[in-house]
Image (cartoon, rainbow, N blue to C red; front, side):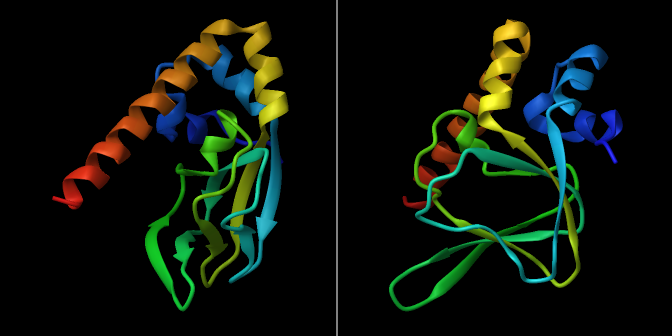
Length: 146
């Protein structure tokens, strides 16, 4: 099964892409399923992929020396691991499926880079949207520390 264009329209990372560009994004998405409580992304490991959540929900959490703390629950139309589109650095948090199965679509950074070489507009829009998201999160974090 391929990811629907309607779902891609809901993903903020892909805001301002047209139907043809969303179809190109869909062509590099690979379906995956995660069982309840299955670890999808592990903190402090490197990764080359991001995931779009198509169904179900996931828990994003961080682990310290003696405990874990849930940061946010994410669901349909949201993404995890999107920083892999910028670099293949260490993951800042872990992600696991919640109580039900999660349907995800994986986007490999290498496939995304290749698509951006073919269509610079996609790369520009997605990276701009990603920069806006990172800036918002950084400002929010800094304000929370005041």
